[in-house]
Image (cartoon, rainbow, N blue to C red; front, side, top):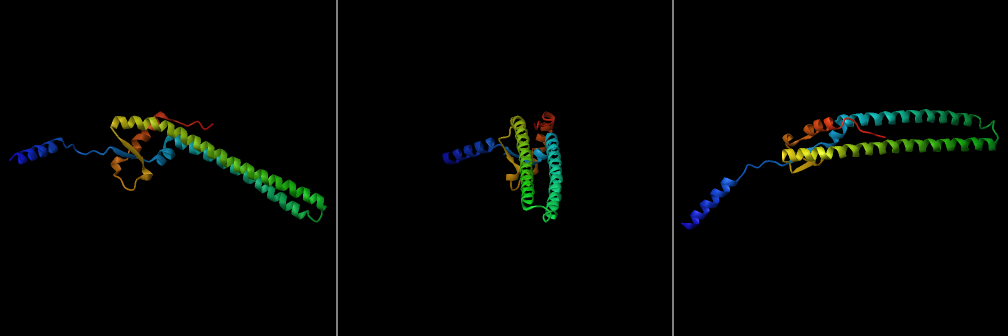
Length: 173
């Protein structure tokens, strides 16, 4: 009889103190925040414009070098071997310089893109921490690391609106 009484008390305590399980793990789509936030869009547009302008200049220079190469090849029989060699060496130097300029442009844009991403993450971190404390969230994961998840656990839109209010643009220089 004492055993049944103890079992009933344990059962009663377990049932009374059992709280509904609420998910305290949510997820964010960081890629979407980087690309679709107001500051992220502006930064992407500026970086793409800079890259496109640089590529356009490099292509014009490349066309000039190709034309110069054709002219040198056509003049090969008219030029002395020393003069021909001198012009070919100068052309190769300019081609090498063009390749260095192309690499420099790509490296510069990549560096600015990394800097913009870091600034965005630095601004995003306190926003997410504050949001977590307000909503009593224990863990926030990146959406790319989630196989399946309830869309109700996605807090990207909420964080995006907070980020857009706080960060209007990113300084790329």
